[in-house]
Length: 435
Image (tube, rainbow, N blue to C red; front, side, top):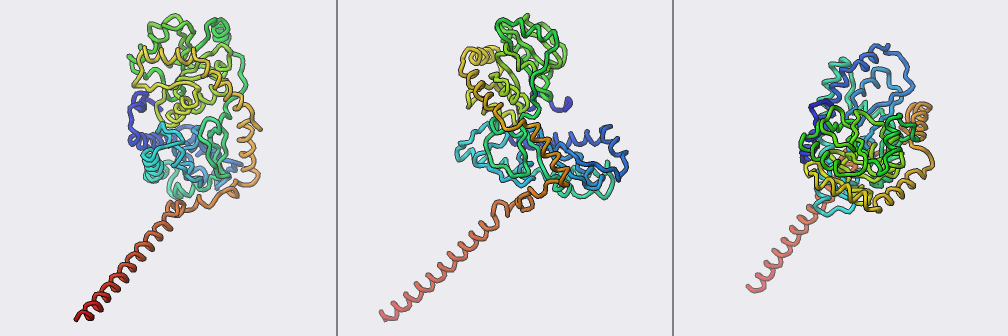
């Protein structure tokens, strides 16, 4: 994401700022992607080159959707590393259940209060409305890269017949999914591989256990404020466990029990029996790995699905959470000791791990099947539901609600007029009798 989007910025945003920031980040990401060498190589392919299938990352925006038009509309499917973003739910015709599915930047649960449901509804549908505005900006970028004649983005997105979503039925809230949305959460998880000799030695020899600390790919630990880094290190220095921290640059004054690496084979490390705790940002991929290997968590969420996942971790007693701006040495150390010393977190995570592994098929096998299915049948539009082509007012039946309101208002008005006429005539008759 570059230095334009740094960790502390995410943690300070309000929900309103987050909506705009997410869309801006999507636009900026597309702007970078459209200048990439990889795209330029694709544009050098002849226009009649036949692709059997185009797989597009549509997590933020469909940056490469014009490739569908350029290569004569081969079958296309979308993917997202996020569970199921609001706008993708809407784009593929899946009903938005704002009454019990929290918008991803809210720490709400399924049982929301009236006020929470109000704000959840506002932000869920506001994002849908704002996305169209950014789509118009993106279409101007397309003209610069692909030339004139590119169809509207909505038409190109409509050609994408299937979505492989990182939605996870155990981690994310249960919800009905349209048949063109395939949940493939955890497809990246594989059996643990042999660790590098040095790391294997550290893990094997850790008599008091190991704590793994990683903020993922986009959340770079090197961008944490210096005082926060110091608070974390001071907390680690009070532990008897070995701490392995993914840190992308050099850091001074490390405690003896802290090991820093710029990159970690995270899945393989979490599968080691001596790992007692995983501290992460609550992103989908890392959280799925922790659940798979049964390692309790402490989440430090910053934005997007991290907020929701952290709430799930806390509610299900799989671990604890701590917001970035709350971090102090004392509080961080207290949370770590609570998770390490209270067996309920490990027991709950082990139970969920058994459920996670008890599947009819591996998510990767499911994804491969549907990708090949799309190639065999020139897409999967047979799975589309009518909602995908209905307007906002039709989907929510707001046009019928409006008609019903008008009908009631007209009926009340007519009733009022009738009553007024009757009363008026009654008064005239009464007056005539008196006279």
